[in-house]
Image (cartoon, rainbow, N blue to C red; front, side):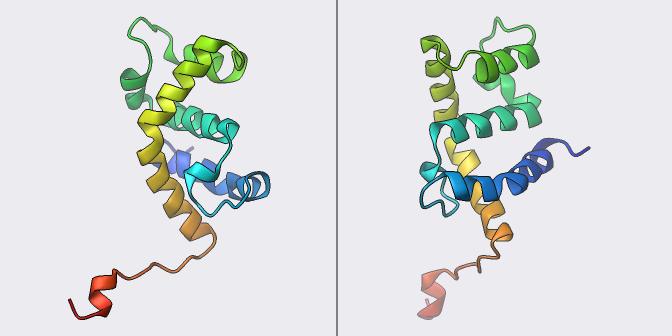
Length: 122
């Protein structure tokens, strides 16, 4: 079984078609996804990257795995849980954006754009 970034990228690869079908105008940009998709991405990232959990979960959390499961799977409508998930997303957004763009480009075989300065001889 893959671990870390490879595990998360595999999850993304398997989810690309779902995201394209469920999110309007999804072109690999995280902002196009629904809040449920963003929660799913954060949950999967923190499951795959245990070393990141200390930066995003409360210090008093002794069983991080159980806490993540409760936060993302069992407390969807609780106000505090919603606030915590939103805060986690804001912290992870740029990291997830980069990874999603890369997986999207590979999945849909999007050609890499050349830096504009090179085309003009700069």
